[in-house]
Length: 398
Image (tube, rainbow, N blue to C red; front, top):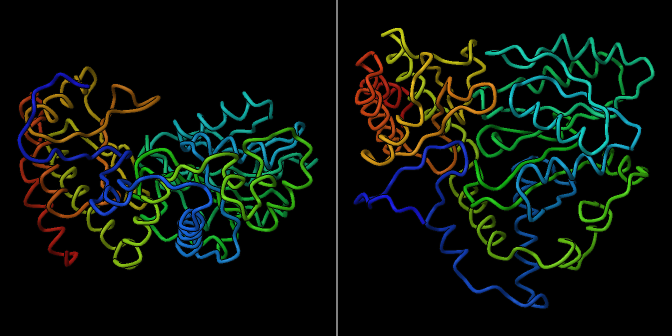
């Protein structure tokens, strides 16, 4: 446990994951686990599966839930889809595309990368060229990080689907929606995404610990033919009406109860309202960053406004800025936690998460605390950030 002093009131969590957990989810997780023969176990799993199919607009998708984080979902996809001699194309998005590539190579598969253009979304032309260059069609799939939480950039899935189609290449489209599911609309079937993966701790408003994989029939058939050895991750072994086989052992009851409650909250609020709330929260943060940037020190890492994520905003800082010091000031003096940079952006940026169970009051409180930390840390900022954030919320009708 931390030895830092207690700050009265509720601390605000504005990392891009884990995100705040609603009281209803905490209450659902507080109940005792059940024995595996209790029909409530199967009912809870079915609620999660059906809720995820509804959120993905994919009523026939196979849903596989793992006691794992997003990296576990990555591994499940690699081991099920990629034969030992197969290759995968991973377009460059920065930290998370490269992390997925490194993990895939560690599992013995070959990775084809497209270059990462810092500050920009996936280069669709580079993806098209990589597929054209694969004349032997050894690339089995294109692994796309939809929203890279390190860069705060969201790429255009429809454009990437179109690139694959126009290339005539049979590669599957696999989407990492860890930071975008339940934040923006993802229609798996109409997009013709073969696999969508996610995790519990971001837009799904549940503590870390559940990896999620949704699979269409085409991907399931490829996995069925795949000779690669696997066990815990194997989709085939999890195709069972028995709950302990669905999880290759005891299901994580508490997390499943929490996820079911979170999906119910999303349903009660309504998808369109959830997405509109995320857009409004992001617009307020973006308005504040634009104001701070007027002093010349801070800026958006995402160069194209349309690519700026509704989930997280990555803010660049002058060289030599003590980001951890700013985070400590915000956390310990002003009660707000935000994130530092990751990978190539370590020490060069900080990140404000605005996804999941967030509202205008929380966003405005976060922005006030960040501004106070920046001022206390001696970082030059424009001073109209809070009024502009308020204006953004008013304009959004929130």
